[in-house]
Image (cartoon, rainbow, N blue to C red; front, side):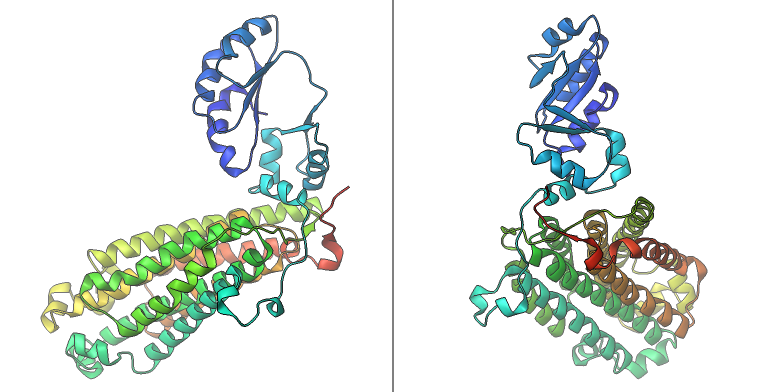
Length: 448
């Protein structure tokens, strides 16, 4: 239920998040033009409740433009005044009732309230385990393929870190550059460290993506949550195309290509079909104070994800254009022309690392935003652990490598430290809610 002043925004914004009907009330004759405009292009039924001495005139003016106009109270319409998911689900179990929530309920409930109510009212069955997978790959479920993609990303990230901390350059790197590590160091004694810092941050981001994909696959897709599959899909369709940034620089990496060729078909198998059998567990919301603290944590993590998204897009744009920011050149104590004089392929080589990191960061940010916005459920500890481990994999290597090579420009590192602060605060606030003990939160999916 919304007022005429916000009807236009509500009719467009609420259906995508789960609203199946919108009531605009109270509507007077002066509100008719606004309501008529709001109802245009609606995706769900719009009902108007007219009030006052002009109710009949309102009904006559709006009847051709909305799905129904009521001038009297309807006993089958129930108005929610509390964000309680269990209460809303119980009301939905009465087929004759229409359940309406005021905007204040949605504000207090936080993101994903419609989805949580539908889940609570949906009969479910136990989730499958690894024993149910079988040995025939043709029969493997999507969540199993999703798990393998996540593990593959973690393995690829660990491999990239090992190479960076060891030889730094592989044979195809040296062939493309026409230079050895010693020659790079002789040309600029900061250059090898700069390459290592780029590649370690990229490796950490790949591990973070893998952790998020494992969590989404095992914790979400396996249990039939459509939002988990959608989050996986959105992030993957950013991650895999951006893995191929290097093609635009004329530098085809064999290992990079092999990872893409192996993991992309698995990703398609993981997301090729929507979950058809609900297998989640319904849990109570718990103490109100705990829930509200968790909502603050949720907001902070969504903001962190948005910040990472902006950072990822920015790094990709810089990598595809200017290659360096001012602090990079200050650290290297050089300029692009001098580096280009060392080798005409040196700048494209550095640019492909930077653009690839930007793409990976964008994919990780997308998964963080969607998991944080859609995945908040009491007792779902996998959400907390997925975000915590992904944050550790993404932030800690970046901080350590910058400190190790003495690239400590405050402006350059400020976004990292802000992200760490926001994430730590969010995880502390949300832990009692997300990691509530199952024995104290588990309830039957068939609510009375």
